[in-house]
Image (cartoon, rainbow, N blue to C red; front, side):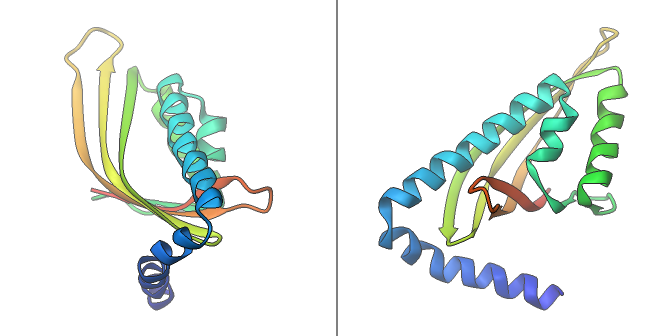
Length: 152
């Protein structure tokens, strides 16, 4: 499985720029749709909208964060975000997309993120900054979802 994952990344890196050159209008539409996915995700995170957060990921989507077990599938993702929503913290999340490469039904996006948590009881706020690499997949309806997310 790991070998297939690494091969997928290598193919995306090699073929992505060529695929985008062959169909600029389609690539532009896909890039806009992917940027919209990140906007929806950020807004849902701040609003503690668990249903929308879960829909931003593929049914078999995975989240790999440092020092945490891999969260796999929408059920586990839902439980994770429900625990965030239950906490006495207001969340803010922002993404900077540094690169989007599209190769057919797959894409990857990489960039930086900033998370701020403000304790609802007035305690000091916390902040986390890092980098992420997402593998995205086009669904049958043409929408894009996050298939794999790795962040530091």
